[in-house]
Image 1: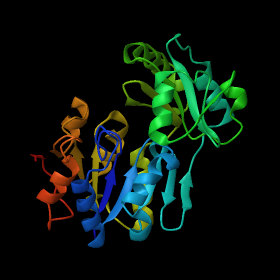
Image 2: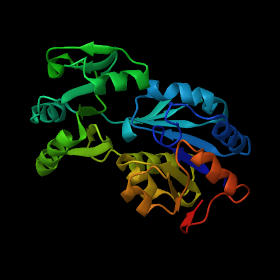
Image 3: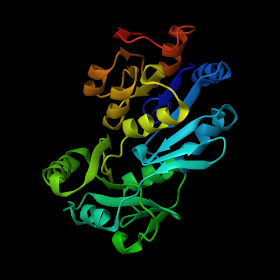
Image 4: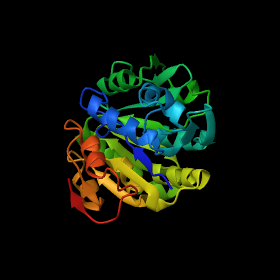
Length: 279
């Protein structure tokens, strides 16, 4: 069966300028023309992944978007949502109740854009920039969140956020949530059982692919579950050390066409074999 490729965006498919380079784009288009299925698997909302889905021609080639770290699966050809799971009112309230130091803020994605209590936060501005979404400031996020919420983020300086994460994980038995660090400055909360690996396992059952046909590329902690699922797990050179350690192969960084280099090195041999190799 033709391979299925799952690609994280930030730090993996995209370079530091948040672009797919011509070489990487060419490699992925060529594979799709040969029958491969491409999946964008990102923590971003669908709107934040849509420009890259268009660039990769996922609608024409039958690709997919796994959004919100696995809380939503979108079929690009039809625009149909194949799966989604949202936070309950109680779960959102539990996250909101976590103590946040002054330098940290809370945000989520709403119909109108990014909902937050601190629109001036550089981390909120970063989320707005990369996703192409406006910032909607409110005095109370919990009261203002009047639409389904797929995930919630506490953002702040990495050293300050470390303490927030420790507190959240201490309370995790009472919080039926998935907690993951997608960036050093983003601590993300999704419904229990939601992660990229679980979403891709669901997608494999829909497409009829097996794990052996899945090659996944990632760089950060929120990619760990999909790398563990994949028949071949590829980490970027810029990946967290723990992510590189669990991968079957380590390719060049996202600024050195790492995805393209790996795919070119395996041309004609997909699906890829297990076994660790540095490209």
